[in-house]
Each structure stands twice: as structure tokens, then as C-alpha cells.
Amino acid sequence: MLLKDARILVIDDDADVLTAMRLLLKSRVREVVVEKKPDHLPSLLKTNKFDVIILDMNFNGLVNTGNEGLYWLRKIREADEKVDVILITAYGDIDLAIRSLKEGASDFLVKPWKNEKILQSLQGLLEKRKSRKAPARSLKIEGERIVGESDIIKDVFLKLQKVAPTDANILILGENGTGKDLIARALHENSLRKDKPFVKVDLGALTPSLFESELFGYKKGAFTDAREDRKGRFETASGGTLFLDEIGNISLQQQARLLTVLQNRYITPLGSNEMVPVDIRLICATNLELPALADENRFRKDLVYRINTVEITVPPLRDRGKDIKLLAGHFVQLYAEKYMKEPFTLDKSFMQKLKDYSFPGNVRELQYALERAVIMAEGDTLRAEDLVFSPIEKYQEPAEPRNLNLETIEKNTILKVVEKNNGNISKSARELGITRAALYRRLHKYDL
Image (cartoon, rainbow, N blue to C red; front, side, top):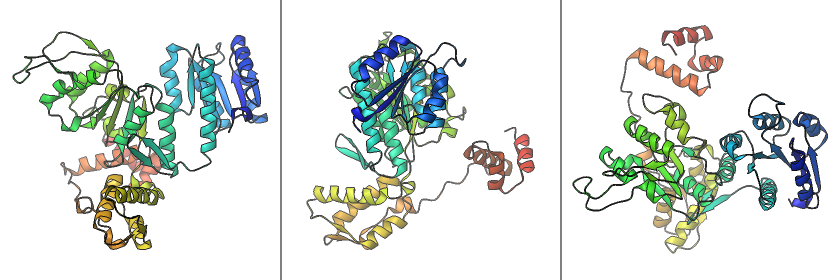
């Protein structure tokens, strides 16, 4: 969609802002409507169809919430789920603006804005609006692609495009093998820090003794093997992005140390009293679910809030439907080129076997299975017998619960089901096969 075809609504209680917006846009768009009073929004949306709404975040006490922009954003979303909303905010409202991205805003502008930035934002949103009608098939990053056209992965792409240009801390959730590291790299490469370092740290691979020296660095002589000064990962990533993978694996003591650094934005290398400022964009990833991170016996809630300005959940492959076929074609072509083989045809039996499999190892398992199939194939057609899935994934036995006390198992089961249903007692009781009254008695019994 071109800018000249767009209908734009601007809402701000500052007459100067409305005048400036009208002068900027009137010769560039099909129609621009300006309005001082946000309470006129419902009637405007009933009688008009807008492509983009530019909305101020603060008005003169019309809604006594302290965050009027979010209030009116919700009203817009109730009236029209598809319209793009750009919020205008002051520097002091950046955290609020980032919250608005979670609630459906498309972008935000910081006062005082540059006209070029407004036009770029509008044009970008209109192009995305047009592209939504066509299936999104991939997101390019350095050397690789995130491939998919299912609705669930398109939602991930859209969220990534919204948050990547910001400096918001991102928590990436998902099972092992879903591609969390690719999402982290895509966030960096689509950010304003893309020309600065991207530093990945696998926290699960760090022993407690290495945690501080690897992350915060050390001075010569700080310990026995410290023969020279060494920068830690925080300092190395300064100016760019630090990706902490498997953050759910670190101890409470390590979490406290990490929280201090994130709050103060400086590190102190081992063996030094010097405080070194660091400027990073933080991305974290874990295969734990949010309820597990909310358990303070395992993870500090204040650290969860610090690392989780926005969360992105990468769906398991079994939930991505038609993406399996698309990914299969992508990987087969990739490995055929790598191993210098002729292009392959995928037999119906091959595709049916892919379709029938649950992929407990997710995209990683699919990738390895297809690489093996390409290497071992005799001809130029891949058939079901060429496809061998990993026995590591297929036959892995579930771990037995450590505590076999019946009351403990019952309590944990109830807690899991209630959390799964977002506290809905009726749904939880049906799933547990008991009455609402019986569930309430058990909730009271276990002080849940």
C-alpha cells in the first residue's frame, strides 16, 4: 500500500502538534483527520476507516489513569483490531511505550520527532499491512533463514519486527530445538545495534567458578591462572547485544549478581575495584515456561521482570502445521547444494512420514534427519525409507518424579492444571475430573 493511498487519523490535545502533522501529511496521503479530544475516538471509528492512527500518550486528565495512551489504545483495538497505531511519547515515557507494544501498538515516536522518521514509520507500516495479505515465508538473518508461513510463526515474525528496533530486554521462550538462538540473532540484526557486537553466552555450560570471570572479566593476578587482563562478555558486548542462553539454569546467587549488574549498568572485573560501565541490549532465552520462572524457590521474580520487558514464545514444530513441508524443501535444497548433489524430488511417502511424526526435537531434529537423508540417498528422489528419526528423541523415557508422596503429586498436578487454565476453576475442575467444590477444598487444603 502506498502512502498516497492512506487515510491517517492524528489525536493530540496540542493544537500545534495537530497543525504540524496536518501540514506534513496533507500533500502526501489520501486523507488526514486531526482530533483534539480522544473521547471522540469511538464515533470517529464508527463512521470512518483509517489505515493508521497516530495517538498521543498523555492528555489533560481526560482519563485519570496516568497512562492515557494505553487506555485509548485498548479502545481502538476493541473497535478495530487491524488498524495500525503509532504512539507519540516523551523520553520519560519510553518504558510505557514499550509496554504499549505488548498491547498491540505498531510503533512509537519520541518527542521531538523528525519528519523523516514519521514518514518512514508510516511507509513501513503500510508496506507490512500490504504484506500481511501474502504469506510470510521467511525472515532473513546472516547466513541463515527462519522459514515459515503458518499463522503462529507469522505472529512471531510480526512481534520480532515490532520490538527489534527498540532497546527493550527480550526473553525468548521455547522448547529445545525450536530456534531460539536464530530469533536472538534476528533481533540483533534488525536493531539499531546491528553493526555492533553480538555476543552469545551459554550459561548452562558455565560452572559456578567460571560464571563471574566469563561474564565480568578479570585482572592479571586475580586468581592462579589469571596471567593477563581479560574482558568479560558484558564488556565485549558493550554497544551491541548480549544474548544469555539457558538463563533458567543459573543459581539464585548468580541471579542476584546478574540483577545487580543489570540494575546499575556497570561491572567490576575480578581482582579490581574499578567499575566499568556497560551499554548492552539484553536478550535471554530458556526452555522453561514462565510459571517455572515465577517460582521464587528457583528464580528471582525481580530478575524475571528485569529481563522480560517483552517475551517471544517460539512455537514447537508440531504446532506449525504446513511449515513442516516448507522447512523440508528448504533444508533438502540447502543440503543438496552443500553436498553437491542434484536437486531432489520429495516422494508422497516421504512427506506423509514427515506429516505423521511429532518431532519432539523440533526444527533441530528435522534439520538433522533431512541432512542424513540427503547424504544417504541413492537417487534423486527421497522416499519414506530415506527418512530416519533420532532414537535419542523418540525413545527418551520421561524422568520419574523425585517426590512420590501422593499429596505432593496431587498438589503439583492441581497447581499445573490451574496455571495452564489461567486460574479458571471450572475448566480446571473438568480437566481434573472433579467438581468445582472438590477443587476449592483441595486449593484450601494445600493453601494454593
